[in-house]
Image 1 (cartoon, rainbow, N blue to C red):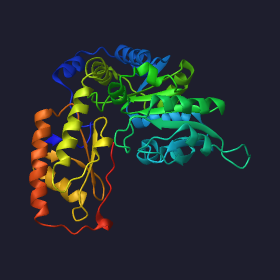
Image 2: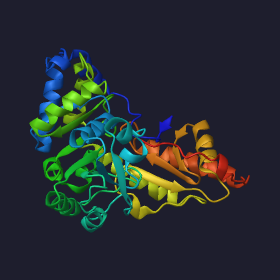
Image 3: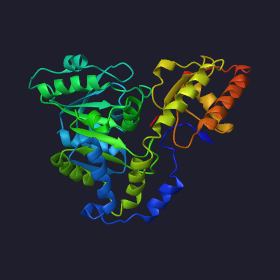
Image 4: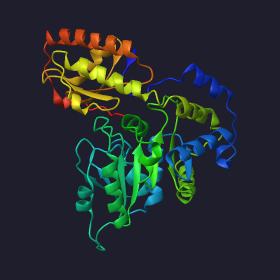
Length: 360
């Protein structure tokens, strides 16, 4: 299978598996796991923050971040397509009791002026706005990169209005590699940043939340409350630490493969791609009105190519550690062949039965 459904499908490399097998471990809840401690110290230093907390998932790091910055009844501001809002199972309401106010951006990106316009005046009838959340790169925005200049302008609005700023950095490493901006510089405007090790970096499990020592002490309490306290977690942290040290720079390969894939898809009759929107490792492409995305995805799965339907006529392909240039070329050949077969047998779309599949 040439699996382009997500960059979460990656498998540990042989070198990573050896490091995992040899990892020294201890009880992380008691602070005794040396591998977890090293990972947390490494990622905090890399992002220029005081401390970090390792957690099982990016959803947990995001939701713990919301909880440490807010109290029930508060309001958070997000872009309308944010992962925190779309794909985290109603966590803001269930776990933190907060309201979400949405800003409609451009491929997931909004401006400081947009934020200023969304702020509520003080009134005892209104919820208190406490937190602004950004996403970089932006998943539903097609892997779009949030400009650092706009982040800094947004941070100024937050500071002027006593708001905290959080980054969902599930694909933060991709943004840094694509722009050449250091992790510390990109993270600097934020009070907290969530980063993922199990997507482009290829580790099996885990994300980290970084911020001040005070905030991370509070984060440990809510990690425990949310069920994220782990014991001999060095076994999985070792994979994350290896990925952080050895598999970050290779994200340039994923970005190059995404460009090759997008250009090849654009040349296939019946497929459309906006090449200008392909800037990191996510490629969104579209089928004609007579061909539902799920039909194409199912036919491609049958010939060994995995892609993810995300709307009635839209699919997503994500280049990743397990896919090389030869795989991209093979996938393009299979997509062209399947499209040729399907176009000779026109489909009748039925939007009512064409699901939108969650994307991670």
